[in-house]
Image (cartoon, rainbow, N blue to C red; front, side):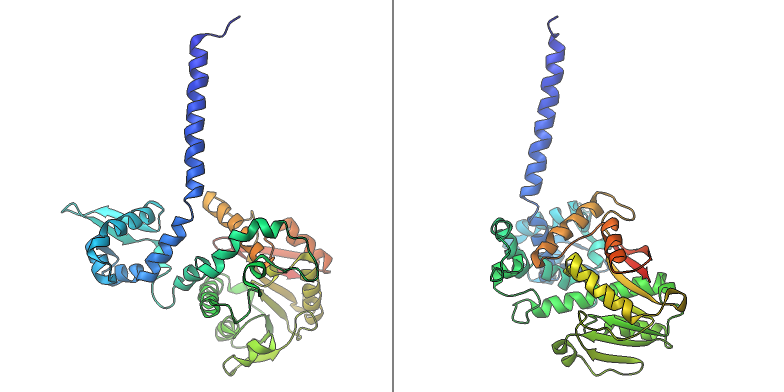
Length: 362
């Protein structure tokens, strides 16, 4: 029996809709790099701070006047602000006189002021961070060898990500500090029970001790130690109060304490190295019934509420980690590492977007 004419029309219509959607999706991906570039431009111009100074809302002309944008560039500024408003980073409303008022949102408020996350934008969307991804095909085709680059970043720049010679080293450190401050506030305001009952804690890879200092201030009875590489400790401000600074190598030894804190450390290492680090942590802490545990802050892919934005953020972060040969992990992958290191149990608590606190028990 021959197909009816309207059946052909339905199939043709569906194919046209599919093709329209396919083109939209392809072009969305092709042009997606413009969003972080536009956000970085807004941050570099000081637009979020300009809106904040005007009470959270301003016209395009006000923004231009406050940030030094030339009048001849207003159409370009308008295009950028419309994109960022459409993306949800700024709000847009029509005033009584018909002009568009651009407003701060919860997201753009995060990059306002000296304690904001503006340096994370500058770091992640800066040329040093972005350039390696142009070399991804070469990296994926590069066979591991003793004399081969150890990471995508090293392939592009000729040195590792933490080399102080990198042009964005200061920005990276400032970005890490700002993000750490937000995490500290989130953990200590809503999840203080993580540190309840501890008398001592060692923050491994803790830099200059901002997290440990905050824990010590919130829990004065907890003796905090920060352990990091010798060159990091050498540049740290002098310790005071219940904070101690120790130079060391986490692959060799970790000072004894009730708890070991690993903040954004393990995603930088492969499974085998993570097991080595965690075994040293286990040697440093007492049994579980004596309060011993390891406290880890990391992404746990696929855990917690997972809308499209969170899902894409997690996967983009995993790809970003390839730059340093790091690894994003799902819960079952974390579990295997914990068990291989000799731990018996763990607890995952989402604390800030896709970031979780993982308590691991011996």
